Length: 288
Image 1 (spheres, rainbow, N blue to C red):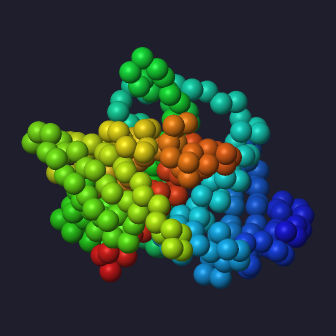
Image 2: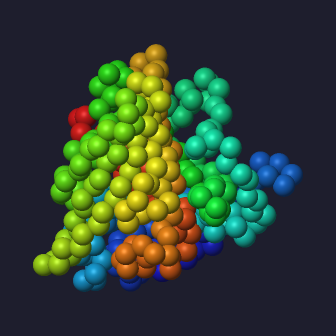
């Protein structure tokens, strides 16, 4: 990778990598004493991957192309965050954390998403949750996507079976077992094909419908132990703002291929950032 240092920026150009063509720019702007704004802009051609394994993974999971750009940006910004900021862990008092935005701030988020056609994401600090007698640290991220559709058009995306409709290539079957009038257990049978090899996964989730416009979900067994989150529909004067908040952390007893991801830096942050983005953009594709 080639780097060029500017007055307040670092530009990059890919010379040789699994992604043949790519460029980026890291910029910083002084906002006042002890306050700096850092921006990351990147472009990469994911349609011409290089290398056997990387090509096979993108062929088996083409949706990953939607999540790689925000995950890459989050990777860089998280590295800066950990370098310059002291990390604190707070106890999570609610099932999932919530961002407190006023109507004007939410309108601005909707405008940014509407103009760019892309989701807007926020990453939370560390939260500690109780899992039985043990405690676990989780990192949540919250993603907003604007849709020029009424709320009624987006209600199906809150359902437990929506995931199979959005990802039919990977999710072969979903079994739904109602717990009560508000909760349902969903058992997802997932298969990822790497060439002639089919790799099965079993994800079990419990969905709780808080009301007609929002739900919460969490792992309930299966190959992923630490998954928590929720989805909300926020009606706007025109259109709807869709919000998904989630955290996904791979435990040390997960299947080998999932467990291998634990060797990646910030493996507790990036899956949720990328996953939220992919889900929001798949809903967008479904509604076109």
